Image 1 (cartoon, helix red, strand yellow):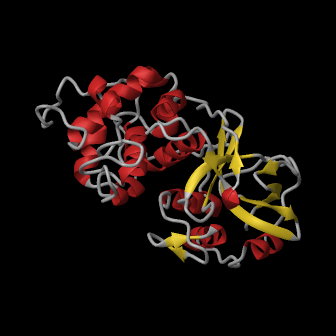
Image 2 (cartoon, rainbow, N blue to C red):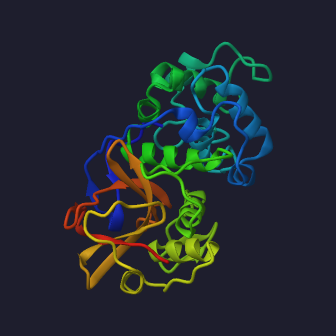
Length: 318
């Protein structure tokens, strides 16, 4: 947690920090405390950790358990990662345990010791860590669901991280609604983007097209639409060329493909549109070598800069 305040986006370029805020009620977007886990949640999260997220969230009325679950997934694959700092020691930033606490932060939120927790509390103990994370989020704005995005941003000072947590959290509720202000959809696009969000954390791999192994940008798009029952070309330029174009300024819906490059004849990157967070458009994509599949903000105005690329436009596979 609390990593750098700069987000690396497509093709390794660096863009400035973008603020993201949640619009609408937390219970509508991320599920209430009593909402059942989705199939994505039960397939991605070990049962013991899933139960911990649900139990810990009840200590902070208004904090959806799905937010805790998304943070745990991103930080340590719900305690399943063997990276340094998850089970012992610390990572390069000094973070410890499955929720990746800095020692001083954990010490400020580790009590009271929850049932089943370690005594004294330990950041490596899943129970202690999840309950401490709930207390921390609650104190930073999650209470009553008043400022979930602010609470997540306080947890890790990165707008891309906030977008990733909020997008992933929506896939964990039993009846998620689309993040876009256009409402929910049962279309192939909605199926594709929901599946793509479930791949968050998969490493970028040039030429990759395999869940759990690696994706490049167009490989993720092709795989997501294959799950939705549609066949798309393999390369981003061909995906742009062969899918119906949307008019500049058209309202985007979940699953629309958004393209970046030098021009319509020089497409270098593609993502799947997720929705809008307080006016900021968010996509899920496989960004570049050294990064993982993630949700992140992008500019949706034709010709806008996205790192070293330009936003070229959007298409809607049918």
